[in-house]
Length: 158
Image 1 (cartoon, rainbow, N blue to C red):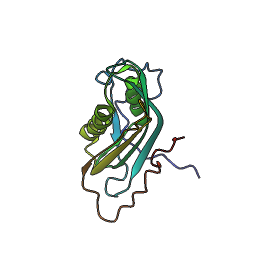
Image 2 (image 1 turned 180 degrees about the vertical axis):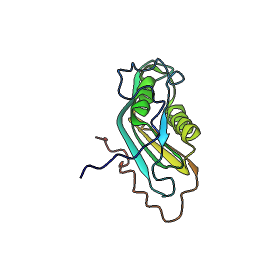
Image 3 (image 1 turned 90 degrees about the vertical axis):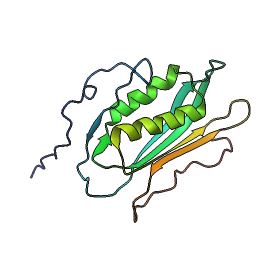
């Protein structure tokens, strides 16, 4: 017997299922959301971005990071293609590691209003120093299992 998919509130999505260019900047990126089919259940959704890139605002050289974004959804989920395009918009964006990491966390939190969110930005070294940046908002609901982000302290990540 075929199962009927649950409606996810995808009405109004503009990027999913269509060829969509990478936005020129993070500010121009449209971060879309869909209804959470289980708003009464506390669970963790994780996005792992092992090839995040941005530009150093001083030297213009590329910076590379491994991002891990965990959140406990409320009414909304982030639509993954729009998240991918938003994150790709940083490729030509000049900002320091701390700014990129915190700005991404804040933008997602503002758009989704999750019960809890955290982002770990594990940046590869430039000038011999790796910079790891962590930001979170909200209180983790009791009884929710959140696995370790799984990124080892720097010893030649990879």
